[in-house]
Length: 362
Image (tube, rainbow, N blue to C red):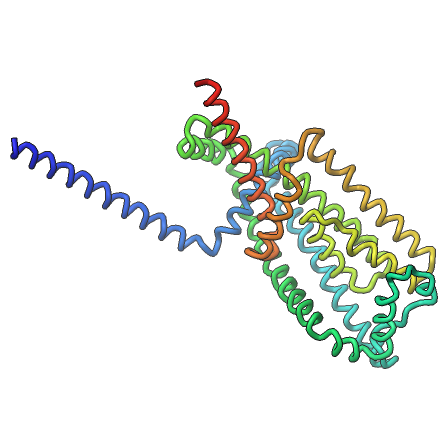
């Protein structure tokens, strides 16, 4: 009897030890793979998001090219990279020209900022401190810099960090687009593999979660990121045509504010007010009308892209995801954070619904 127990314990020990060793090797391999892929994880995840969001567009382009997937993939890749690179070049060129113009203006006139126009006298009372600061800056900008040095230092550091993050983000976007095109090219086998992974991880509800993932990604990208991109492009066109100084920088800030669901208003409205004081009334009025159309377009575009159903997540979830993603992963995190947090939110709600259904069935 004791010998049987001894053999049984020995067998159990060997089995447990064997399992521990196997798990240890497995976790070691997984950890090693993660360390190798760590520099590319963010890019790969964003590539997956792009591929899922653009899958319907890709299928339409494949039909347009009569089933030639490679040509369709190259066309879509070039189109996306052009949409990303051309505005970036225009913004950079605009910024360079504005800095040169301001430098030449300062050397010629001895002051950097033009004085407030006569129309500022009719502005509301609460704007008087702003006009006074503007007047002081136009006379001697060094006084304003010294007086508000702490605040300007914070703003300057934030701008430098943001610009550096934008440059890095654009490169990451390009790499993600290239990877996404590869995923789309082999979308059929990858779709079946992804469903198998969901089923393996979650069980019988795996395919349900896979469908939720695809729907959520497409809704967020179209309904929030897509609308933000369209609005920022509209406001950017208005700024450039109206000759707004540093139009490129203002456009980028509008894009960020639109993504985090604050809207373009906090930047666009002050710019319009400024243009009324420094340019002719016709140009300023046309810009104001265009900005008004852009602001209203949010209420038109979102129902078109999202449909008449409920949005994929509350605005707070999108806001926190975008801000948290930006702070954690820079410019690309601004887009990815909103998608990932919304996805987690939808998973949580779906999980609760499944538990409630199981309780009702019991």
